[in-house]
Image 1 (tube, helix red, strand yellow):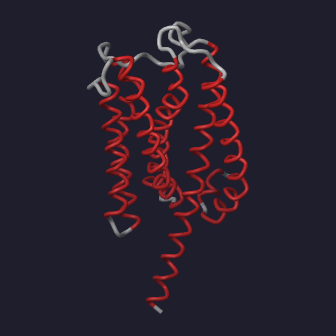
Image 2 (cartoon, rainbow, N blue to C red; image 1 turned 90 degrees about the vertical axis):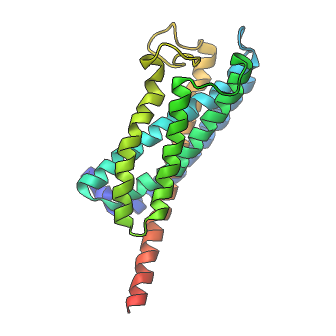
Image 3 (cartoon, rainbow, N blue to C red; image 1 turned 120 degrees about the vertical axis):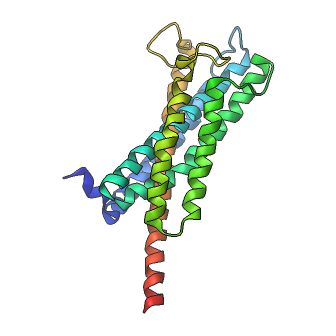
Length: 242
């Protein structure tokens, strides 16, 4: 069985119908369990107090905001190279989800930054690149709405996705590129000195798993909706011609 078989809309619909309830259920379990564990089962940090618990929303949302754009980049490249419609519709479906994650990351970052830095916002390299990434999300969504022909819209948004990937990369590695800046280093790192303490680390991993599964469930749901909308549009076009 080839992976590319699922680029066929009918086979994608069959597979996603079976998989989606399990993914959605697992996301609910991980999110409820991880957030409850993180917010109510961990102590306050000796430096940050209870503010540290924002990481259970901020870190997973920030990770998925970047990874959603990476997923859009991959599926857009598949569309541009192989012209599989499901991949283009999956990229379109992921954009609003990625935008919401980006806004959650910006909002929770501001809530954490105000007591820690004494300001809601700073033109820090990572924060600035993250804000630009949010604008790229908005531009991507708007471009899909502005172009009537679906294939042309997929082509143009695919190119935009490639350009915006620069800021997705900067959002991830800005702290490494520029030494200055208020933003702290990575919360999850192979370097034990940069990692959060185990008492915060384990519930954070559960929350991250929940966000990943939630993203997959929402993208599957929205992609199925996009496929149905494309089919409906094709049927209406045939009726007008007939």
